[in-house]
Length: 194
Image (cartoon, rainbow, N blue to C red; front, side, top):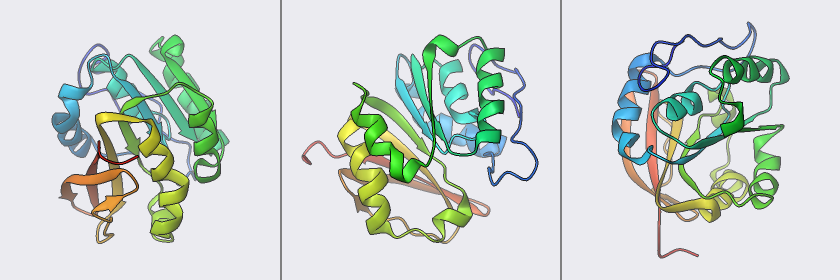
């Protein structure tokens, strides 16, 4: 795994440890995703949920983001995330939240002044297949809706065949792309919503 573009282009990153359910995004999908969101990254605040070893958030920092908040529950993966952050010498621009995202996110967000311009939501596919959309709306997307800037984007990666709602909390679908066995759905903050 490596950084594709920007300040740290070509720098290699540690992968998740063997046995982890973390599934890093392929280079081709990451390149396509960043092609769509690139204009939003300069000076942006980024939130990387289910971040694994940080490939999306660190790519965003390389391509101009100001700071990134990472959230991951697997302690073994967090060790590699911290090493990747140290290798790129960006610790002062990063915050790491360790624990269960669905139970912890609202509290983490409400404890900060965070207003995110770009959010990555990249959960393990096995978890997504068991999601109740009403449950994750309450636990993930409603808190995000309160902390995403107007015009901000949430990039949600799903296993192929999983249909995300057209609207969830204060977020509405903007684009969706299929890539082999996965889909990426881009949601935008709806200014009219509370």
